Image 1 (cartoon, helix red, strand yellow):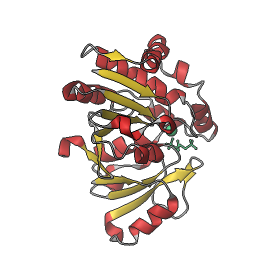
Image 2 (image 1 turned 90 degrees about the horizontal axis):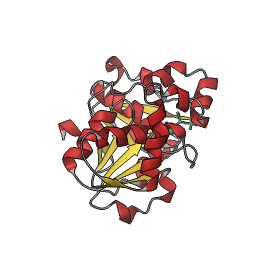
Image 3 (image 1 turned 135 degrees about the vertical axis):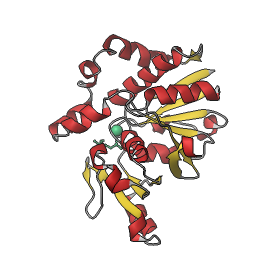
Length: 241
Ligand SMILES: O=C(O)[C@H](CS(=O)(=O)O)OP(=O)(O)O
Ligand SMILES: [Mg+2]
């Protein structure tokens, strides 16, 4: 098995994704939100790139069955039901709902890889479940970090390093330099991820906005043992597919 890591989705050549596992990471906060929503009983999440697309899509849906969710500039979009804070995705709110979801980085990364035939979502919350999935699938794997505003983002690369470490506990594999770099960046801080995460632009931005509880939640390793999977533009728990 060969593991390759991309620091953002911009540099992805979709033809490289065929017949591979693709893991999309947006730890702060989109893939953490999606993992939490599915764990709390959401039926499915439909990622869309643009706000207008989300609003158009729900016109054909029964209002009782869906929620409009996401952010722009890290804050809830006017008229939407939920923001991009995982703490809002409680069972009471999301159970059995279809969530139409758009964010700045994560949903764009998901759209970019949507033609691949095996796309899963990773974050710190489900890192071990993702490593276990990759191990069982046994296929060459590409980790796609959403990044922040098209650039390298600490939070995503550190998460890739955590998944690398957990995968190396399960199997032997070869990897590219960025995969190795993600591991060596993470390893000295494995007992306290804050000590490295706190230097990241995205972390600092969310902290300045007062999203401390979101950060604490998203930096919790292995809170959930589920793996979200994107098939035909819809994300559901892989365990239910
Ligand atoms: O809401 C977030 O955390 C970010 C938006 S920003 O980069 O902080 O403006 O969106 P995400 O798509 O979850 O990275
Ligand atoms: Mg992010």
